[in-house]
Amino acid sequence: MSETNAFITRTDIESDDSGPLDGQTVAVKDNISTKGVRTTCGSAMLEEYVPPYDATVVSKLKDAGATIVGKTNMDEFGMGTTTETSAFGATENPAAPGRVPGGSSGGSAAAVAAGEADLALGSDTGGSVRCPAAFCGVVGIKPTYGLVSRYGLVAYANSLEQIGPIAPTVESAAQLLEVIAGDDSHDATTRETDATYADAADGDVDGLTVGVPTELVDGADDAVVEQFEATLDSLCEQGAETVEVSLPSVETAVQAYYVIAMSEASSNLARFDGVRYGPDTEAEGNWNDSFAAVREEGFGEEVKRRILLGTYALSAGYHDKYYKKAQDARAWVRQDFAEAFESADVIASPTMPVAPFERGESLDDPLQMYLADANTVPVNLANLPAISVPAGETEEGPVGLQLVGEAFDERTIIRTASAAE
Ligand code: GLN
Image 1: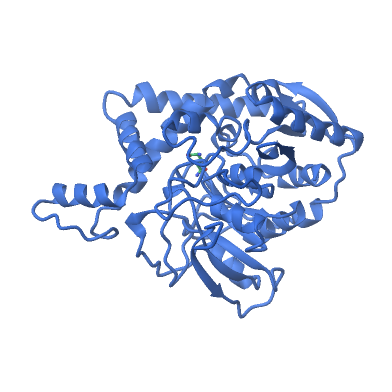
Image 2: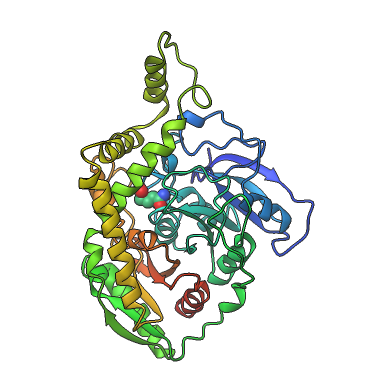
């Protein structure tokens, strides 16, 4: 185990091809399938699972000439904000010792921050690329839903999630996005694109309007807001202007997100039944007993909590009360963003309302952990693109600036972020 514990499995997969990622090392989150290399999702359930195929993004890395140096640590099945729910131990934050690296793609961000990989891939269902990028002082992009193939990504909540790049600079993150973006016959939600991204990192924000939603700033810690405002000032000095916008629906976003994410998870994780996947147990006899024994042994506490709550939210009699209500809130969030974009080109907020937690701090209080996702989950509910770029430090660690764009307008958030860095 290295000091950071950023990797669950180390690899040295060199590419035979040559392309834009020649000579670059890339770390891949351990919920992204790699042919012949175990892919655990941070779970004891998949400790020995070796996929027979590569995720589309992994094939694209190989085609682009990258060297894959390992599979990174993560909250179990992506469920968490600290990388502490992993069955493979916690990851250290190289930018804030003693504190969590964020999650769930904490291993990917820590690997980049510690220089153990040039670039990394994470996945973002409700903030899991942006949160660890913010906490570790690096750049992370959550692409528009449908820009990057999810083929080979082990599903947590598939209507919300995208694979996204983590990198030391905006330009290198944009270049990695360029490599992984585009349509894929294996994922019907993807769309064709010939957009380029790296060249958008030109720092030109002259005439750009940055919308600032009061709701996403008011809830943040003072020390975080101070850094956020200093970064906005610097954008204004470079020719941007700020306007206040309002997103009243975000008040319901965390609740709606967790109902939808847990509901989808309860269905997606039903496949881990001990027949196709999972550890051998001593349980004999009927199917229910062996199914229960495997899941008791293979899943951690947070995963069990979410499967139970998700199953409850979808059950007959409660479906309309919880799941349907959450879908209504989701539509409201989407509409709020559309209105905000009538007066702004991008929407800015702190990525996380708090600085990195101390290790162990949030484990006994899942609700506190869920609330830390207040600024990131609305973006997934609306399927929009967002970037987190370093925006100074508090005494407790790095702060991230989140910039949200209109659907498939990654270029504008990349441009704005490059002016902020
Ligand atoms: N922290 C959020 C959750 O636990 C987001 C996780 C993610 O994006 N995978 O669901």
